[in-house]
Image (cartoon, rainbow, N blue to C red):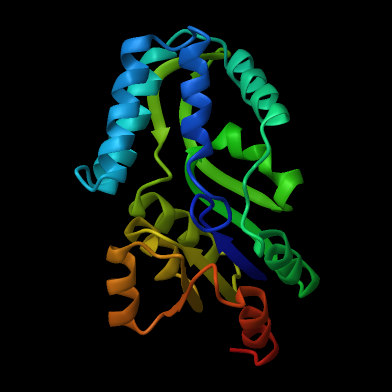
Length: 231
C-alpha cells in the first residue's frame, strides 16, 4: 500500500475553519457565550504567541465538549454540514492538484487532523480524501457524554494512526504537516515534508534533514519529481 498523510489546517487550508464553526455555534446560542469567548481568547493567545499550540489544541476541545454534553450527535453533525454548505473552504492553490497527483499515482490520501472528525468527514468530497481521522468526542446512545475519545491534534494520537498503517502493509508513504505536533505524522513516513511550517517545526525539520516547502514553492511539481524518482 502507498499512502500520503496530510494535516489539514495550514497545510491544505488557510486558517482554522473548525474555530469559525464553533464561533458560529456560539452566535446561534448553542454554545454558551462565556465558553465561546474563552475559546476565542485561547485562539487569540495562540495567534499572538502567548499560548503554545499544545495548550491551545488541548484546552479548546475541552471547552467545547463540556458545552455539548447531552446534545444529540445528529444535531451537531447537521449543523456542521449546513455550515460548510454555506462556507467555502479556503484552500491553497496547490491543494486539490496535490491530492489528485497522489491519487493518480496510486496513493491513498489520508487526513490526520486536530479538527473534529465529523467536521472533516465533509472534506472528503471537496478535497478528495480516501479516509479522515480527526478529534472525536465520545457519543453514547446518540448523545455526547462530555468525554474526549481521542484528540487528534496531539503528536501521540497522530503517531498511533500512522503506526496502525505501518503495521498493516504500508510500503511507501509521504507526510505533510505544519506544526511540531505533526511530527507524529512526519517521523513515521518515508518522505516527510514540512509544508508552511511554524518556527518550531522548521527547526525540527532542518535538524532532521526533512524537506521544507512553502506556499510560494512549486509544491505539486516538486512532489511529482519525488514520486517519479521513487524516493
